[in-house]
Length: 477
Ligand SMILES: Cc1cc2nc3c(=O)[nH]c(=O)nc-3n(C[C@H](O)[C@H](O)[C@H](O)COP(=O)(O)OP(=O)(O)OC[C@H]3O[C@@H](n4cnc5c(N)ncnc54)[C@H](O)[C@@H]3O)c2cc1C
Image 1 (cartoon, rainbow, N blue to C red):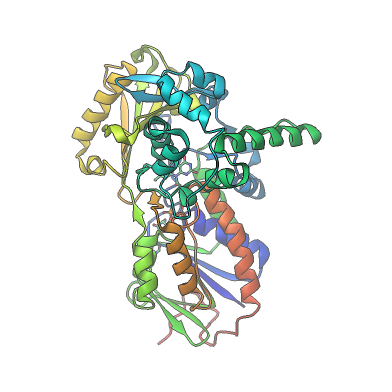
Image 2: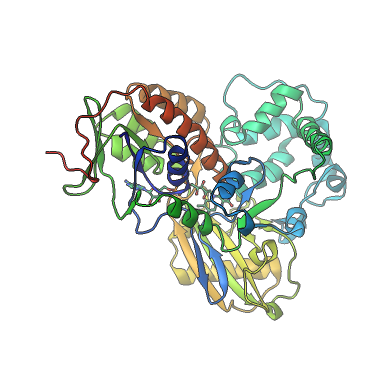
């Protein structure tokens, strides 16, 4: 029997285990998780009737992989989609007030987020020749080149703040927003590319007699994203062991030995590092210093999530929408606020609202170190300014992520090439997770399918491992 050890039971490790079991039903899977619970960044807590997400808030419909995973786990009936208002009503906090983000070209004309000069720069993008530079370009440089400085400062920054909590001057366009780079290469204009692909999607849906999918729509589950984690754990009986921190791995003649703390060891034909890149670097430090160096070089930002519950009567104008972003360029204490109970139904008890303030990010990691009292005071002040809410919340919960979202800085693509070439030297060693080819949940679940296929193919070619015993964990002297 083939043995595969997966290190890390976040969504990447769990989804990979599930997909691999589907492809190779007789594989012996071991998932080792250092925390006391699975899920990694995904966790949902119910507190006094509020449903609080610790990490991600949902997944988009841009890729089918997470919805398909939910279907394969029998969770389709528990899916909830975000409200239509949350798709349409998104705001920027600029110059002391909220500005609604435009939904399309007409909306842009009337938007107060940008000056006329700034708007003109965006419309000119349609006619500017598509000449991508032959080096890895930052997101800010891309926006400046295609749409002008104002679009870079406001729209480029808001995009990066909202998705990566990063710095647009540092993030690589090709790695962080590969579709934008692809659209420019294919259509000569990013705006034209997105308009054409939206029209193509509508045409295809009509031809197939179905409603066109709305790309901006977010999905979750009735019980929050934790339902996905619970579903995966249930589908993988006996595979998961929590509370095991993998220290290092050792290559054997035909396979691997995975070392936990003390005497714990697991033998395997294949090992997958599904933990964050800095942790993966520690695990392979003795095996391959060059690989470890490249993994350790992937930077992470820090984020504090502050969930807040208010009585509806405390909020002068209860918002109907997704929330707002304060572009990181403005260096505010709060990166953005999500109006969770306006996004999904049943997130707060009757008569209350639930919001989440996200603080920190690449340029304001210091905020994450503030003590609870200072952090709450800062969030309260920002919410007073943006939302005119003066009362204290009736409920709060603070979650700190010291290594929140990996940052695909300029040079990330080259780094991935070097990592891939080092991995080719170690048969049966694989990497997965959001540190490499996409930071969203959808990217993790899509990677799971691709990697499961690759491992299933490779396992057929590996010689058998003489160190296997039928027991797991197995101790090898
Ligand atoms: C605040 C926040 C908001 C987000 N919002 C969204 C969103 O709305 N939509 C979206 O699509 N994405 C969002 N994301 C991103 C999304 O959460 C991640 O892409 C995804 O959860 C990453 O999963 P992962 O399994 O790759 O990594 P992780 O979730 O980090 O899992 C890695 C696991 O490895 C374990 N581990 C580490 N070291 C070891 C070791 N030595 N031995 C054993 N185990 C180890 C860890 O404990 C962890 O459980 C958000 C992220 C954050 C932080």
